[in-house]
Length: 281
Image 1 (cartoon, rainbow, N blue to C red):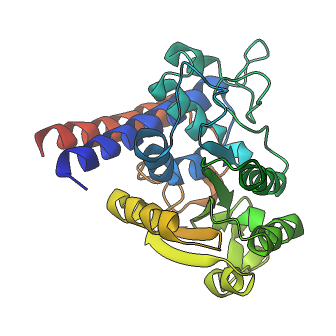
Image 2: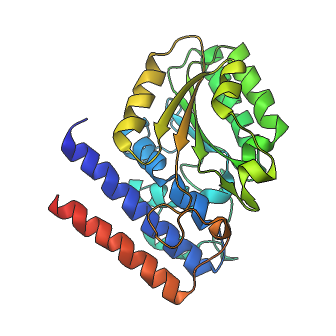
Image 3: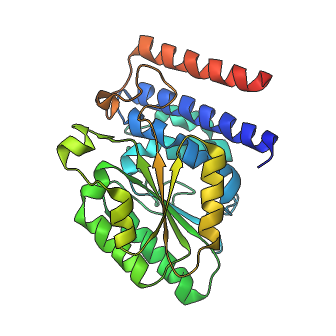
């Protein structure tokens, strides 16, 4: 991938991280940790990979995206705002009673949201259904979804993946945001899903492991997924919960905690520094 495009993706990921912080701070509620960890994946999908049109959010031939870990909606809303689906100023109304930007994304209220999610495990099931519908209808759209670490403790996830493999849904690409933490601590302490790579392969998926903060690796993995025939693809993205904000990184406590004013300002300052460095690279 050309250097300029790579730099652009890094820039969008950082802007989305700023959007995440401001949304959660404004609401005094939300889930910053897992939203920050998937921002690089989201930036690649929305600013390079997906065939979408903000002017036609219900375009029949668009690629579909399902944020299965729906509590990380701030990352999705940031991408939708930067991509032009929703006004950016609406982000500061996140989780307010009068706002359409609820804590979990609603397909009925938000342009560009393909599936309402929040009940863990249900999003990936819907994504599998979309991919199967595409096959049955002879469509060439692709379906993307992001799962969370804690989410794959849900049995429904594995039923969905088994179904995807059974029907050879090679138009489905799933990401695991593998940051190793969930609300109660390390996933290996709560209810270990490891070894995830071996389990996904045993369920019939092709598995690609990448650094989930390296845009080049994410792009290359998606390219490989597009070439894969007869199997859905699982991209295990090794990530850092709270990525981009030093005091949030690798801290399970930031799973569902909003920053105060001082913490918000520090986080935004760090992200602004990252943007400034990108400008001079």
